[in-house]
Image 1 (tube, helix red, strand yellow):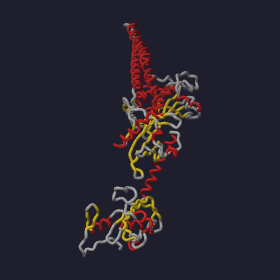
Image 2: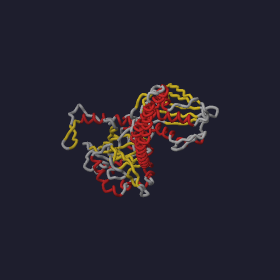
Image 3: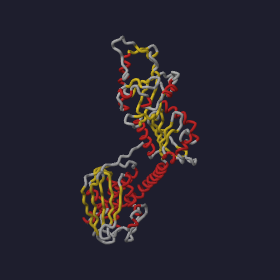
Image 4: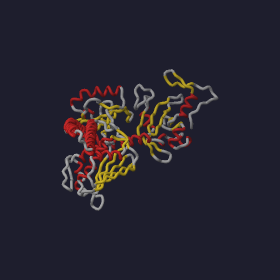
Length: 505
């Protein structure tokens, strides 16, 4: 019999499917033929009685080539195996017991294709009582795609740069990557099969089981321990601050919990240092607000008194100079206020405006003009950018002042060039001074470090502050020296054309 069939010339008999339910034979035949996975029927001698189209396609045979042949031709299952598995009429294998649809499940059994190649299959067997004698129904599923996906998952799992661990419903680690084991000071093999508690500090273990049960009742992808400190136990006994993400997945037919563990000890150290640095900066701002603005107010008062003392003997040139002093005092007061407001701000994108670099340089030179004999050239070949004006103005002012201060001649040229560089704006300040020794290129960006070739005194704060301003806004700064004929220095910094957005938890 090549295919199951019903005899339409005779009255069709309903087939008992259990619990008093019946289905017409024709419907059963159609269901057999249309099944999307391989089905075959074998007799008690393990000979193939019938096959469906999906099985023929899976093994590469026509029905006539395998019907009547031993099942062993397709897979290593003999008559004795069938008798052992189904001889008492009770289904066996996963899902057996009270599940009447269960059968013998054979995992990763290598089947034989008509071409001779081997491929993994999963076979489930079930007794099929018939009037003419007991037959056996076998379902066959190609597990090669599943195995490929599992292998790919295992490779991705192992290559993750964060710690990964799969935990079963009993809290045992069934799979973990090398990164997690190394992070916590263990060998990978020694943790497999052990309870997750071994990675938890003693004080957390009492609550862990209840928390896991709570998660398993309503699993979801989420962060663990939001709002409180989480630590993992290192093999040395030390505790590491960590972040943990949880998600649910099915691995080898079992529901598992996937935990992603990230060591944040370095981040915590940096956050602590940054918090302290910001506190120091805020304290400096409070002091600077008084110590810088008070002298300026004193100068403004002196100018006012000089006007009064001059009385009616006021020379036009003297009055113009007094007006210029008052204007510069007012501008310096506004500049200090802007700097202090900027330093207090914790948002890098605060007070962003469209930057006109020509106007920025003009304003800088108006407040702090370069000495006679020096010339500042500006070349702009860039689209406008949106950025905090105070920050960019501070960087440019420091670089221009540096070029003048450390020049070794009474005359010189400083060239400011602005251009596009993909998503960044490139700004360079180039001078024709003595240049900066190669060994000092990195050092000059540190606090209180200078590299003057002409003995000029300086605080060593300008370049360090400029570097900080550029980097906290998502840019970078570098030095190129010498520029031409062994002389000159060019400071170049890159600034995002759009403000960098800072996320806040």
